Image 1 (tube, one colour):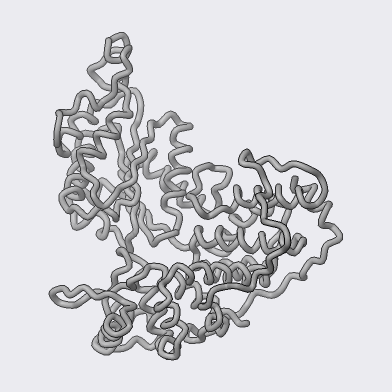
Image 2: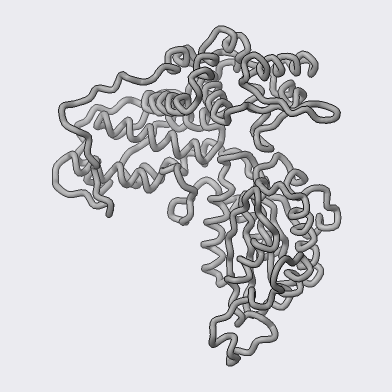
Length: 453
């Protein structure tokens, strides 16, 4: 299909490669934002009603240029779609080092692993691809996503219900439990139970190795749940059980996820997900190139890397939309103009999810005057469910600033403007944007502002 598309587009106009954009200061606010806060009514509506370009089965009928374009769009969606995490190895790119570290920690060191980093940095995609790789090596990998009301006994009973009794030390292959396809959950007590019962059960796993993945662990609010998980990790390690835990969550450091638990530090390893490098961004975008017969200019790759801030989610989102913009123009090279179109469309959509009052506020003169503070607050709230303190904002500002003065400005934004919410705590208050979309919009806008237009 890629060859067909290249042959069809051979005569199309191709924009020449441009040099990478230079970096501007953080306080330079993109001018186009002033006009993006209004609803976008500029789309030209043709006489015919829009139609789907492909069937629900992803098949495209017909011949000529339009079906080829439709197939390219389907291929781009599969290669660069950002709406879901990557779950297959053929779509995984840019995180080979992290995958190798995770495999080594599990296989060679027999440690439990805590994967942490900011949102959209690729934690869930990493564990899905790791699970696929581990299952190929005959590991029994079980995945669980945590929620704010999650309970220790419920989650681990669900895990136990997926471990066949065949792997329990006390069960022979010819026993009735195996013939009836019973699982480990039948050996747990009814009602609530704790880490001791789970470790007693899992310590008797034989014939395989079990990996339990607790994804989005930062959403767990119950301190008792976290305490029980820490105790379980210690018990499993002390008994050399053939069971290991992988915990993932949004955090800036290890302690934010597991708390202060010195007793298990020798049993775990922290794996911080760092931002993607430019060459790793290129690896992801090459998936789209190979799928749809397109090519990203070096300048386009550099621009996506800068604006995405190393986030695999944003790399895929902007790469996908920029490639679609090129297809709309019937050309094969994705250049910086297509990336800028993708960014502006994304910002417009994000802005549309905000209340009208917030849109007007961010487009006003006061927001322009406080632009560096607003961006610094968005950056400071990258971790810990968006919460930050005044000192965190000061650390992000180029010239620092006194915490007292920053706190006063934040309170002003939390008061009359109602843009930020405040939580009073002993010692110092903490703040966060009332609407999460504001922080995401500000961060991408700031990245675009850093580029020389």
